[in-house]
Length: 265
Length: 371
Image (cartoon, rainbow over all chains, first blue to last red; front, side):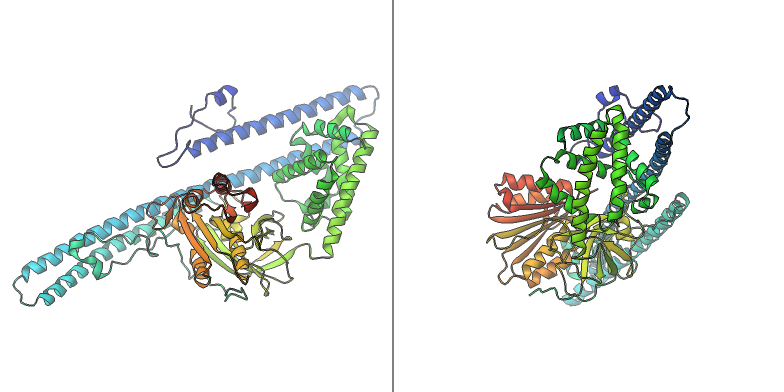
């Protein structure tokens, strides 16, 4: 069965017995976490409903019991009863408040989870895209350099020829790179605006807006890496400037005041 | 005092689950309306805490030795909530009213007298401990944020300055309250050993849907005010064992271990320390630059970053317990570990399997799971 948690729908023992979860996606162990969590939420909701029902039934039993005991004398509601009723009213109000807070927290959790997922997807895509851009820039630059070398094939000065080819390579490389970078940044910017719009319309409550994670892009590789014979330059893996390892920063991060007497040698 | 009768009447009441603490607090708020100001809007977590504390007291009521320490801690801890001795009688009256309500016809004057006596004993221990503690330090510390840095969209480090000294041991934590979330307290470990200028560092990770962590990661700025309770926690450094040290930190579980590393650096002849710092992705190693700077000045300290979910990471790859299993035997080490629940559990399990004696393993469970 699939797990649904529409409110109002009751969970049956049979559903619990026959529950099956899909396996987690590749690279993760166990069951799919989302399904398990959804099912747990369903079970929790059912338990809360049952406990509330139980509590109100018990209150009802107490009330009836008191009525039987009190039926002997004709006095109306005693002070003890009034207090218990006040307690019950306050308890109901408290439960309502608890529910509102829990719902708000649940909503905030969903939004954060969604944002986190979105961020991971965007970063993964950016990484792939960056790799593609570098590959393309490299192949076009190599081609430009080759053409130049072929044209100047008869030139006497070998070093001069090499330098010119390298220059052609770098010029083409950076041009292709810039074009891609510009297009990419524009897409990102419009994504940010879309997101901001959709969040504004769905979130009326004042809440700190999450800035869109903004990957910085690695600079073109140094000329030494760009020799045509070496194949595509590595996409700067592990360097601090790699697109997925740089934290977003819109403003320059505040720096700590100089450390006070931490007695490090 | 008839202990068995006490426990039976408690069990009869406890059957009713959440209705019990619900009744208790409603009764208390009606009796003394101003007590409502001591509690947060949502009482769900608070009710669970009350039931746990009561259950513990009732189950151990026959063995007062262990109980006294627990109650003293509880009494001290309640100082920061503004719980004053004056409220204790009202709490006792509400407890008795709750017991009477749920015990129904089996509630007798004898039973009521027993409970009254037991409660007064408990309350006195708590009141005494709080009074004694009041002679030693403030109920809570006012802290001002003097630096705040968002290291990743959901991880921040910040530094506060307090005005009164707070004596604590590296590795300990304090409960923190933000003005945006009144009367909700969460524990955070200091990420530094005590300093003379009364500043302290904290590392926070935003928990999805977490009430306080979101404020501390994204809602703080220089000048923000926080309240902090007294330092607690037993993940503290045991010097003088003659053994080398392994620190295993998952995500912001790094904070107490960084404080411990700093403390070790003060020793004239520090042991060799290996710090394993793990996260799921490289950007989760939010404090690596700082650690490496520290290691550069400490020849006895080695920092090993590890990442579990990024096959392209150039350093150690895998879960922390996998990394530590393949990088040594650790049988002759003192191990300190802190981080997400699953990570801490896996680390204990792995160390035990590697033959590290229990007495050499010290852990702190941060109580959350990495999303």
